[in-house]
Image (cartoon, rainbow, N blue to C red):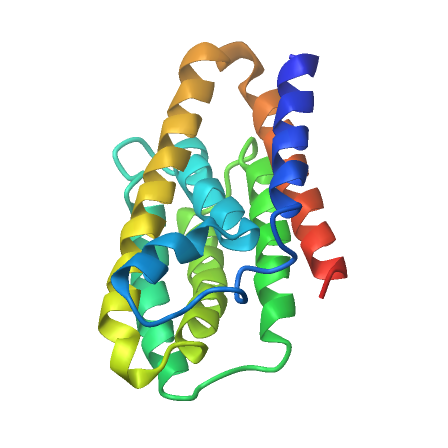
Length: 196
């Protein structure tokens, strides 16, 4: 189990070496650029964490609600961002949302009302969506949005797969695994915050 925790922490920290933030260094006008965008460390960690949390904290048969909530809030807020809506310290908020998701994974061992968790997911998704939308020119929004929504959904599914694997293969140590993963995600989010 210690090896698993070390691996998860190393993976999360290594992913932060890619870039301090996911909103620079590429175009924002095509489907392909949209497909690539969520692989920045802040988005990647958040999307995977939503999937893991959904498996771990939502009632059986309701796992889909976490990713669906994120995707819906993401597209609405990305549209608002494209129209010029923003909030102060947006990039800081995106990084702190990664910390939030880490804390949610740690807390998944003690169930909270699903509405609270889904509300936090929606709030974080709004920050990510505003960041996506604010960098997108009007002419390229449709293709770019389709791209980042496809990749976001795929990363959510990956997180669901991780969550299911934890339940199946680490059932007796599920809380330890979630705590380790949550700590790794939270530390990575804090690191990203310090790089802004």
